[in-house]
Image (cartoon, rainbow, N blue to C red; front, side, top):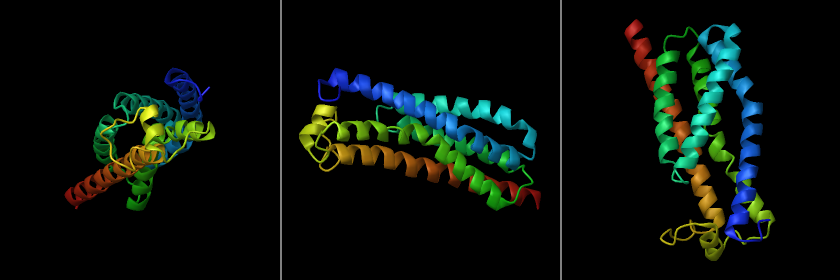
Length: 188
């Protein structure tokens, strides 16, 4: 399976990442929807928030795939989500701490497609690929111009997943924080 050529590896990786994303979306959508409903002050709209979150998840999965591990589109969506969520939450009557908790959970939810990429790393590691080898990184598809240690499998996956989680969380939560304070300043 992963010991064969690049084509076989990608087939197994594609199926694995699809299954992992389905599992993450199924397991994480409802709890985040409940937080959004509570922060929005209408606990009966959980289903509506679930539908919205599935749309967010699909958009994030497409953006992550389209960015080809550059996180450009994914980080761009963090700006969109932060603005939309911040503008919505600043009208909430919830305490600021609850709004920021909701924003943090939403931002982590939006990182799940990037985090699911970890499953591919686990597959190649379990298949016996040397995770600290630049040759294995090149065989996997890491461009030749990428410097060591980022050109190894461990470095590549760590940078791609880590940068997505850190940047998306900081941007989304930071924007929400700024917009909440800006909105509360106008009300006073």
